[in-house]
Length: 274
Image 1: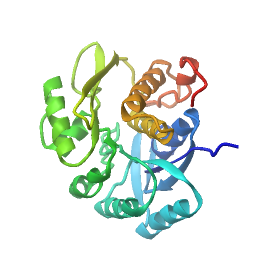
Image 2: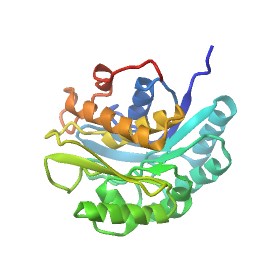
Image 3: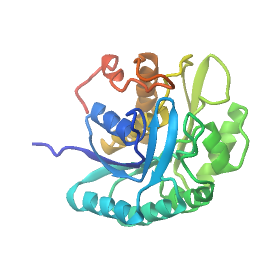
Image 4: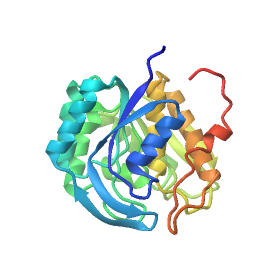
């Protein structure tokens, strides 16, 4: 029997099931990867917004990481909501010694409702402690502006901000173009470690059902990297996965509804090589 491919998400909770750990685990499963998880924060939320956020003790986070390390063979790991500088530092120190494969950072900062999911004091720790460990980071435009310190209003500025983030330590960068940049297409920028610049474009969908898109996109990249795909191929697959998840919408909740995590299985052409 072949060894089952395993991945890890280190992220926050979503009571509504559309983002955070829940979105990550659903995506891992859809990509034929067994998902494990470490809970970093407990937001109380649904599709209408985040009601409150409860801290998880650092000791509990450390213990969760330890039990994963002692029992699972992790081939790729992603981080989502890390919330505080102390959690970021703890996670970074652990990942420096753990053999968990490539690191994907989804720099979760603000919920769709506008609620802060990363404290302002934690941004510096994210840049200094975690970013240099990243195989790839996947900020949206507001997050890329915060990390790079550079305003983004055009594709050229997306490239410039992405290069700044690479200089800060991330090997590969995706700047997602769903925010601010207007047009009929949503274009994501991929800056590869070798200097290649690639644009991934898809039709812009007019919908409120986008809760958890960043989590899902980065989780798909993580699953593909766990299967030893190249960064470029992993991002291309993730773009197709999230586009399908948005296009083939589901009717859940009264607010910003979640994406459809099983949509891609209906359109992907399987070739038997997972």
